[in-house]
Length: 260
Ligand code: SD4
Image (cartoon, rainbow, N blue to C red; front, top):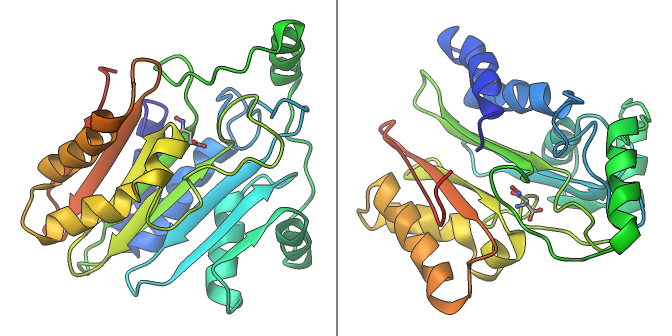
C-alpha cells in the first residue's frame, strides 16, 4: 500500500530470495516503515489522535491460518512484532490498549515516545480549528499492508498503522482486525486493505476479497468487486479505499476508488 512501501518490499525480498518464510518477510518489510520518522502515518512519527496520543493498530496472519493483533497500543516502535508475539506466545488473537502495552513490555519491547516534534506541530495546528473530517488521499494516508508468497508456496501478511490522524481517542480501525485490514488463506490467497477503515470494517473487506478469489475471481477482479460493494452504498467522494491481493499462484492485483 502507498509508495513508501517500495523500500519495505525490497527489505521483504531479502528474506524471500533467501528462501525464508513469508511471515518473516512481511514482518521485516513493514518494520522498516514503522521505524521511519519521516512517514507521518505508521509507527514512529505517526500523527496522533485528537488528544495528542499516537495509538497503533497492527496484525499478522500466517500460512497456518494463525493470527495475532494489537490495537489501541501506545509507546511501542514495532507493533507488528508485538502482534506476532500475541500470535505465537499467547492463546489469544487480539490484545488492546494498556493490556497490549503490558504484554509488550513483559516481552522486552521498550517504551518509546512516538510523537515527533513535526507531528506534534501538525497536531497543534490542527487544534486551532479542531475540524474532524478524516480524509484519506495520496497526501494523507497511513497504513502499510503487505502480503507475500514464499519459495515454499506459503502465504502470510502483515498490516500496521497509526490509523486516522486526529481520530477519537480509543478509535480502532480495520488494520488490526482479521478479515478487515488483512486476511490470509493459504489454499486461496491473501489480501490487505488501506483507506477509510470504517468502510472496510463494515464489509469485512479482505475476507470478502479472499472469498471472491476462492470463487474464481482474479486478484484484481476480487479487489474491484470489494471496492464496488463499498462504493455502491456510500458517498465516497471524500475517502479512499484500496485493496491489494495475491493468489496462491503468485498473481497480484489491486483496486482502489480514486486514482493514486
Ligand atoms: C485506518 N485503514 O485506521 C486505516 C487508515 C489507512 O491510509 O489505511 N489510511 O482506518
